[in-house]
Structure formats: C-alpha cells, structure tokens
Amino acid sequence: MSRTSTTPSRLATLGAAAGFAVAAGATAVAYGTFIERHWFALREESLAILPPGSAPFTVLHLSDIHLSLGQHKKTEWLKGLAALKPDLVVNTGDNLSHPQAIAPLLDALGPLMEFPGVFVPGSNDYFAPRIKNPLTYFSGPSKLPNENKRLPVPLDTETLHAGFGQGGWVNLTNRAQSIPLKGIRFDFSGVDDPHLNRERYAGWPKGAAGQNSAPHVKVAVVHAPYQRVLDHFTADGADLLLAGHTHGGQVCVPGYGALVSNCDLPTWRAKGLHDWESQGRTTPVNVSAGIGTSRTAPFRFACRPEAVVLTLTAKTAP
Image (tube, rainbow, N blue to C red; front, side, top):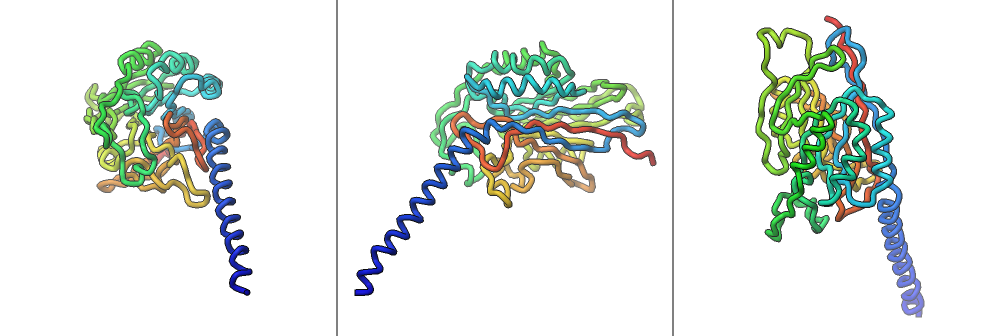
C-alpha cells in the first residue's frame, strides 16, 4: 500500500518541478525579449594612453546596432547620445538587421555625425541575417554561407558607407589614416571583417620623416576580435584596439558570464576592457557588448545592450 500511495505524490512533485522550470524559462525569455534588450546602458572606462600633458579626450564606441524597422526606442536612444558631445565616435560595424533600415539608421546617427568619427564594417553590413539554430553558436564561430549553403542576401553597403562618409566619418576598411583631434595626432588602422576573412592589414599611416618621434596615439579598429587580429595589432604597437561582434555573449549566466563569443576569443573576454599580450607587447582591447541583437534572436539576458564611453587621459611623464 505504501508504494501505491507515494507514487501520485512523486509524480505531482515531478510535474510541479517541470512546470516551474517551463514557467521560469518562459519568464526569462519574456524578460530578455521585452525588457533587457531595450534596457540600454552606457559603460564608462578610463585609459592613460595620451601623450604627457594632453587634455582628456572622450571616445564614444558604438557597435552591433543591428537596426531593423520600427525600433523607435533604439533610434531615439542613439540620437540622445549626441548629448555626450564626444571628441570622437568609433563605429565597429554590424549596423543593420534589415535591408530597408539604412535610412532610419543614418537618421538615428545623424546627430552623432556632427562629431569626428571612424568606422569599419561587420558581416551584417554586407549581408542580411538569416534564421539559424541558436545551438550552432556552441559548435564554433558561424560563417557565411551557412550550413544550408543558401546564398546570403546582400545589403546596400555602398549606400551605408556613403552615408557615413557624407556625415564626415572616415572609412577604415583595410585602410590607415592620421587624423589630428584636439591637438593630438591619432593614427588609425582598420580592417574589414575578420569573421568573413576579409581583413587586410594596411599598417600605420606614413607621413613626414620623424613622425614616430612626434606625439601620437595608435588606434586599431576591427569588428570581430579574432585572436590573430589582436596578435597582429598588439605586436605592431597599437595603443588601443576597439572591437565588437560578440554581443557580450548576448545570453549570459549571472555570476559566470558569456557562454559563447562567436569567435575564438575566450568567453571571459566577450565584453569589457582587457589587456591583450603578444610578442612581448600589451594593448588594451575594448570589446563592446553591442547595442542590438540579431533580428532572428531578439533577446538578451544578463547582458544589457551598451555603448561605451572611453575617457583617454595623459600618460605620466617619464
């Protein structure tokens, strides 16, 4: 009798546990979809990398906007960032999530184009996102074309980049350029998206004899922070490297962090400011957790969307 009398209670307990797990999962998905992915944040960092005696210099780092149609909260938040009055805006790519989002994106970023800026593209500036199984991210970095061998839908990258250029932002796609800003010479070197194996290194800008002895700052700009790219720029003497792509993991475990980085970067480096070492040199690398999500996976958990304000200050004189 005892066996038959306890069976229903055990089944009820298992049923209650299963029901609780389903409810908790549904609540987490709803939270990530309707609350956290719209809960935009500003992360603030400080680095002493400017020539001695330089005044503070602010960099606004934007990445992975992934704009689709009707995302009014995101576009209004982007417009409001102009109130920060940055000295420089750096956009590290993946701006789009819809072929018709170019005009709304340029409108949202219009106020920020009043300030100097540089940019590089990500894969979602070339190709529209497609539906895929989220579990494939755990099998390693995804590539285009995907496992179904379907050709990607191209985006109007030329119009997007022309819009940035008309706003005064400098295209660093496999290019290097020097820009004087607030009395400081910034040497930029950027690459096309390593996630698509398109990076080609242009080196650092070359100018007058003795330019390396003059005060300057070397800044590398890239979309996807693959280790081979971080190694190259670090060994080549970059003072700062800015990247995105990872979405900070997008779905994180509280107290643990990201489960994936969608590249070969260790997951604990999927967002934030960290030092990267290569060939005896060290470069601070800022990886943005990004502002948007893929249109096919519109949620975040324990990983708020962010823009990053980096305040650069002077190095201590030797």
